[in-house]
Length: 421
Image 1: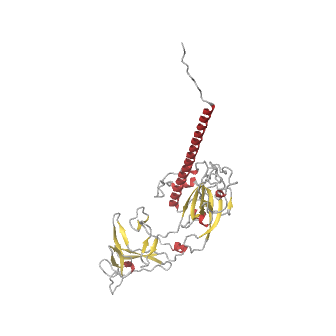
Image 2: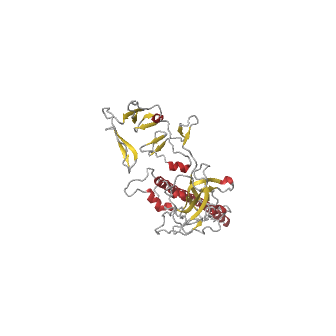
Image 3: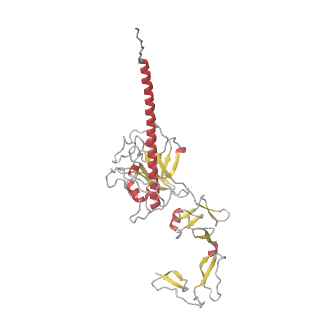
């Protein structure tokens, strides 16, 4: 009996080689795709943490009307000064770097008006003052929230570091981190990779938050020591952001290789000259709001061009002199009250001191004065008449060792109280 012959044949070496080559190519492609995904995830994570820090910075500014000073670069986690702001009043460190921070200096037009003489401003580079930020944006000891502007995302210890495990660099103009800070331009300049006059992206930046990327060149670890090889042997683009002693920083597109290598991630807050109010060319007493929306003082949802919730608007002559604007003035088309629903009781401000609003005086006793304005009309009282209209006399002189600084009118008795000191 003849048996059935089965032909069994294996893979040749050539076929096995082809399979191995194809598998290798697929593995390389998968590895490359994963590497790109991992890198993008690190970039997104870093940017998200920068956004959280920026939100905390803005909340801090809302509470204190200034930014925090950078923390020490050399402080190690666990040290008492780790994450604690240094003092931006301290100018003992000249231009250059000490163990804790770096300082640069430049001249700027501080209020952006193109007229004020240039002033010298110092720029300080350190790391994120995490502990100071947290303390500055948390509730106070009584549990009362200091700011009505909520932070989008609470800041945590992980937000101190980028996705590569290094601390963010934080740079601010020292003057803007002091209690007497009056809003003005910063002294930090941001440029791009192209060079030349057209490369300046912003020249009046308040602060920057900087991740030094995967190579960590210029960053500090949580132990306060330089990451990687520090600032040694860097390409020109990255050297700009690595303790080079000036107030200029670079925001470039990413290059992974070559002489223009750049992997830093930089976010900055800039300031521009912007005038919220302007005068009409037809009538200098007509002042209008150039903003698209309404402006509120002590109120989050203003209902008019200038909506003052309560209290007074202080016209500070010192601030006017600082700005070089001369007199501190406030002008408006009309003054109104607001009951929470409707605007009412409006009147022309010219009525206060002009001919349109006055009290009729008795020729024999011309002492009527405006007590208040109600529904656009004056309510008048005679200071020297009682409720029955009987003329009265009052002494408004002070003792020899005092002087008169004001008069207070009692509407119930219709008498003047002298204010002496």
